[in-house]
Length: 136
Image (tube, rainbow, N blue to C red; front, side, top):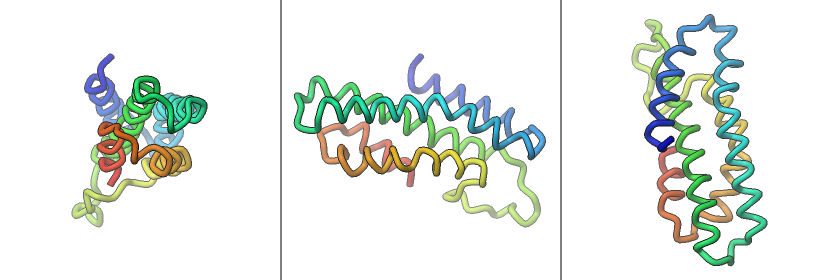
């Protein structure tokens, strides 16, 4: 499945999750995100085992996959926030912000994302840099 297909799938699922009763949204959204979070964590462990000074041919695919998972997580958080119905007080919601269930995903993934950013963002892996920029 391509990255674009994964993003489109997450967007569709987030539209369904946003329609769930509020008490089910957080658990359901986290269930959707856990696979990407687990994969991101596995890719960081793999990158650490390879080492940041390793041959780029070996490290690049791992960091590219980590970048894909960050992009999927950010897409999921944004799609869920965008799919939530606006109340009158939220009608002018800042599109740069995330709704609370989305923030929970980012908080859960943040320790791993910060490791990627601090250890590997200077490597010649433009996809990783793009993924980190997409967060903000």
